[in-house]
Image (tube, rainbow, N blue to C red):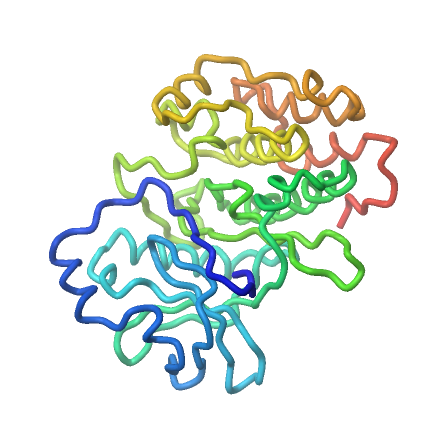
Length: 321
């Protein structure tokens, strides 16, 4: 949802292949570029493409009622007949709408256009992805800890609603521009979120046998195909912070199968081996969150945040926010 000059490629991992009937649907429907300038729901004028992914296209749009620019996500037309993709889109809408936290992107509207197009309207963000900042290697220790503070706060809010994100990664963490230059994190893409209690208020379902997530940030138990819990989000958050501090992911492996095996079989390197300058409590907190056995990790996102907050050299971070 970055309001940049070019469209970013948004990654959806482990996506089902498109059927031939869907290919014909692509040809019948307007292309993303052709939709620029059109109006959705008699209210949102699509102005430019912000990003294109496997599930949909995100546009910058003008809201005629509010007089504000917004980000509008349209599900690809050829996916409207795919129960799995429609369910995932609906899941994202419900998850985002149910979590009230400053670090979770705000949902403004959602619905179905007259032509059957499913859409989701969110706040328009200006800034950059955490992934891009990691690649630039220009994040300070203080900034990474601030990312961690806000991320764990957002996860605590989601987990309180019995929602597990399941795809925490630098590409889904947006650093919104701030007048003061401070870090303002926004967690994106709750499209593969899952409820941890079947009796909770929102009904989410996933496709049987389909692995969802991004391998580099998947916990050992998820790699084994075990049921997903909040522990998986805490592992992913720690893997992201490790990457941000160390400038490299936990395991560097191009082959996905080999990567999954390494995550399951190998102990992650200690952050202290690569970043000995970091406060000892920060290293210990992240190392613990990366324990192979979920029972050895922090029990909650709040516990993880408390462990990070105990690093005395970092002052001025409001960990109780």
